[in-house]
Structure formats: structure tokens, C-alpha cells
Length: 385
Image 1 (spheres, rainbow, N blue to C red):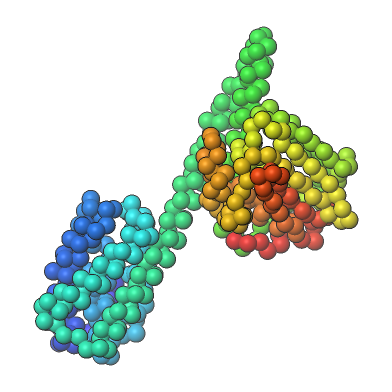
Image 2 (cartoon, rainbow, N blue to C red):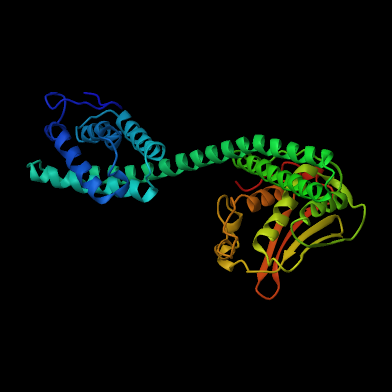
């Protein structure tokens, strides 16, 4: 006797135990009863075609039944895990399920299995019941884990494709605006063209940051191109581009402020902080950008007035695709990808530094990037995934 990933054991196989043969003989009615109950209890399952609804369950059912035959192959446990993972993965790829639906339908399967076996007079001893319970519970965990992993990968693929595809129309819009700027004699038209160019450049920077953030999530550490950089000039350039959209005050301790960093990564991190301050801060109060130095280190602060970040959100805002609840609910500020702050943290940590945040209704919200003046010894430092 051998069960495999395709299932299809025969109830007439003499190598199977009587209880395994009895289970296999009931495969079709049990699976049909399960699908009927799942369609009634799980809204996402109501419109699924039968092959998609069944998924890997027939093969899983036979593999589970084979475990009740003494002397079964040890490979059955590997097959059972593979089928559970495939079930969760296919639910993520082929349905509108969420993780709760995946768990719920397998709980229904467990209930239907034991009920139908009892109804058809298939008696299980305590050891057999314990075996089925334990492996179905393991299947629920493995299916849910696989669903979560595949769903996250699909979401990243979609966002990456969207960000990549956006760059072509952005480039076209920017070139058209630059053409207007060079050919028009109307000062108002040229002024508006300048704003279009600035906006498209800003969006392009956000899409590049998004692609980089997804790439950073897939690697154990960040590799940066460390060069000699004038941080004062870099920050001033970011501020000048952003103040078209919002008033910004800038204070820099030293000009030039030279050190060793990855200029492009630092630029995008600063752009993220400034963009967040514009998006989530008080529209009437100016943003404050301050660059200061201490012994061997530099601190770059972006401060805004406006709704504070709740203490319980102080960590979640640094997680991919998560945003602080109160900021996300601020009037007109519900949009965003939830990737900017994770990128800022990864860049700071890759430079051997850190990001600190303080937020209150009275004092406003401040993010501080604290990095060494010379990041060469820390280049590619391990960072949180």
C-alpha cells in the first residue's frame, strides 16, 4: 500500500486496514457534505466551481485515511504537510479567501469527517481519533501559514508591477511638462509646468522607493553604495523640491556637512519623512527640518504639527503595509502605501544608525534619523526583516 499526493486509494486494496478502507469508501459523500457546509458557512466559497472548491482535499483525505493503516510509509507525513501547504497556497492564488476562511473551512472538514464516519458506522478507537485530530490541527496551521506567505508574495508582486508600470506614464507626463516650459511664452503656463515636473519627479521617487523597499524585504541585509556626501546640500535639495507643496523651515548646523553615506538611499529616506509630514501633518503649520551634529554622529529631524501617532502604533508604523490608525484617519489623509517608514528604518540601520519617533498632541510628531558621520564601517549592517 502506498498513498501519494494524487490520493485515489482503493477501498478494495487488501493492504489497507479495515478502517482506512471504510474511510476511503466514504470519500465522495464526506467531501460533498463538507463542500455543502463550507458554501453555507464561508461566504467566499459560495461561487467557487467544484474543482476549485475541492482543491487538494481528495488527495488529502486519502493520505489522512492511510495514516490509520499500521506500518504506513513515513512519507505520508511529508505528503500530508505538502498537501496542506498547497491547499493554503491555492486558496491565496485562486480565491478571495482570507486566513480566517481557510481556518474555518478546515474546522468544518474536521467536524464533518467525524460526524459522517459515526453516521455510517465507522468506529474509531481513541488512538485513531487522536491521530486524525492531531494531523487535522496541524493541517489547519500549515494551510493558514502557507496562505499568509503566498498572499504576501502576491501583494508584493502586484505592488511592484504597479510601481514599475507607473514610471512610463510619469516619464511621458514629465517630458510633456518640460516641453511646455521650454516652448510656452505664458509665465503662468510655465509656472504650472514647473509644478507638474516637480510632482512627477516626486511620484517617481516614491515609486522607486517602493520598489527598493520590496527588494529590501527580500534580503537579509541591505547593501549600500557608500560615497562622500554633502548632507547639507542633499537635504536642502529635498526641501526645495517639497516646499512647492508645503511651507518648510530648514536649519542646518554646518554647511557643508560632509560625511560618508549612501546619498541616494539617504535622499529617499528624507523624502519619505518629508512626504509623510506633508501628508499627515497640519496643513497650516510649517514643517521643520533640522540637521545637527554631535561627536561622530549626525541627527536629521523632520517635525510636523498635527494629529499624534498613538503609543500603540509606535512600532506598527514601521511594518510593511501598516499605517498608524489615527494618522490614517486624519481628514483627507487616508491614502498611502504604508512602506515609507519601514524603508527609512532599513536605510538608517544599514548605515549603523537608528530612527527615533516622538509624538504628542502638544508637541507634534518628530522623526529623527541618527547615523554616524562615517558609515563605511557599518555598510550593509544587519537590519530587521
